[in-house]
Image (cartoon, rainbow, N blue to C red; front, side, top):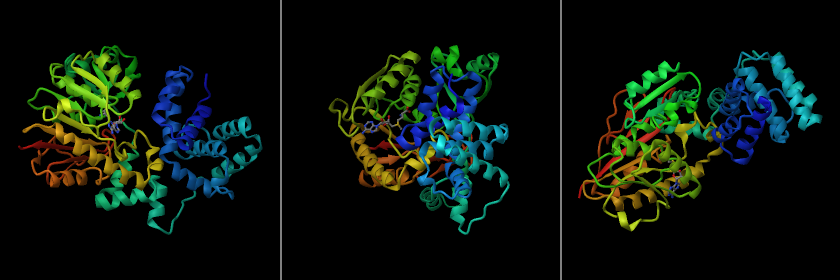
Length: 438
Ligand SMILES: C[S@@+](CC[C@H](N)C(=O)[O-])C[C@H]1O[C@@H](n2cnc3c(N)ncnc32)[C@H](O)[C@@H]1O
């Protein structure tokens, strides 16, 4: 069996220094059966928590050591980070147990540094209640929310007074939501079954297809999941497919892996209308196939394609969902490393790709047809600014106002584009719906 803290350090190292994804590595570790069931919660907490508050933790470490963090061996630094996370943010683990574990872990791979680790952590513990002060407001916010300055500034510029709410929302612990495949069971019936199986579950507030599960074992082990009644999906994502459904013969999902929205669309079309799912990466097509097969949907075809490549057979014939590759700033709750791995330059590059994808997608839309453009980011340059740019160039397209209900987290633009601000239950998200007039 794996040692929880050792595994946490290993995952952290791969995420921070090798570009791996925290959610995938955690899933892999948990699925391997090498983590004891009672340790899964703690492992997840330490990995996500340390990533979420990395800049806060590094500030604490900076104030407790004379050695620059960039000169500290990575492994040793990550042992220190998970230890500060446990002592500063969790109250269930006795600090001396955390320090002992940290020293033992250091002895395994960097024995010469074990005294240093012991000294830094004991030093922190002695001054645990010290309140840090900062000369600049930005430094205070970086410390409090653990976001890089450029990202805080971006939210401030784009969302004004709401930026702190966004930072807090992105630091929330996400509630797990499932979409009900209503071809197999109604939401009410699925909810009843889950409750009878001992889960604490509620209907999602905005989407009519979702269930929030706040207590109980992993639903993955549950027959409702295996038999294709339930699919893990964020409630924000559940709002997209219903907007794509129109009168029509054919649908394209140009950027579809792992297929969450594709399958929802096929379910809403009663598995009777062809839905063609594409993705640029061959390796990701397997995930779409697995989803389709588990849900028992036969109307979905799956093929590799670069969305910038026009597929002549569908020109002028299909409604399109363009759930574009994006910076992912809306899903930081689930992938906290996005805070530190994205750069402003990457965001600029994405805008160009997204505009090119929109320009290609429009070719498929017949008169009266629908184009839904969505992203899981809050960067307005990738969202409303892109769609406005597109509408300016293509006067034969019009925005169709979206209305999924009211709530402080649901922001509608004057054109009726929807931005969902992140919180406990929903990812940050953007959805726009366009119609070709002629
Ligand atoms: C936001 S994700 C899609 C999520 C998916 N719609 C769902 O609901 O499960 C964007 C996807 O676009 C794919 N992608 C990136 N560039 C692409 C391109 N040029 N053409 C097609 N797919 C692309 C990525 O591999 C990724 O799977």
